[in-house]
Image (cartoon, rainbow, N blue to C red):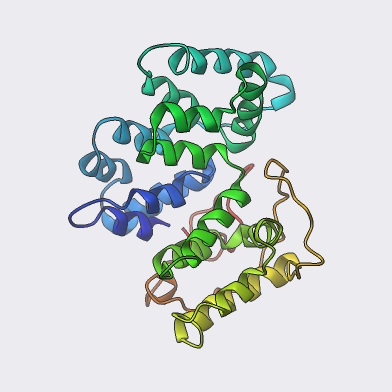
Length: 298
């Protein structure tokens, strides 16, 4: 994940979509791990590179993503806070002539996905449109809108949609496939289930139909990673056995896979001397609620 962020900001231009893929659904503990790894690998902070490489409200958004608390709250006990945020977001957007984007950034980057899902539903009950739809209307199709929408969406639903976008169309977006499958390996079983529920296809079977990567070494490595993920979560599905999962349904964390991932060209998995994985000898201990699984690469 740290390497993906570095490459997204390296050279001319910034790959904001790649940054959203990495940061939008990372927990506070995962973000802190990425920041420490980034500093160790590149001798500079992630925040300093974000500040140098972005500007305006985008800078505010990405800096908020890596510094906001994103603490887990009991949604059932936080209805007053949710109602306050719903009102504040309405006043900042649909309730005024010009949108107060900073108010959206402050509230959306502050919370985890469970809270934002509840906020999305509560906003829809109060004002007709969901919060996700309000963001689309008020902030248009900008990097900010895409980032905020990604945070509001259910994690598995978001990555299933991004994988499908990378596969369908004239050409396969191999960078997107690599990035998501490599960095989201700890939640791939849930993503595979959601992919089947949304598109009626097994993700591995869908990849097999892509002529640009079919029978290539790259395609074989992707298939190997997906097989590990599916076996870990018992997520090998067919269209007839796919559960009908709603976009807002909570996803239970899958069991972790203790073995190392296959070598994946273009990522840290293929780098000689790759730093130890979390929880293995030589890596700083990380613990606490939401801490990455032992198989999660930084």
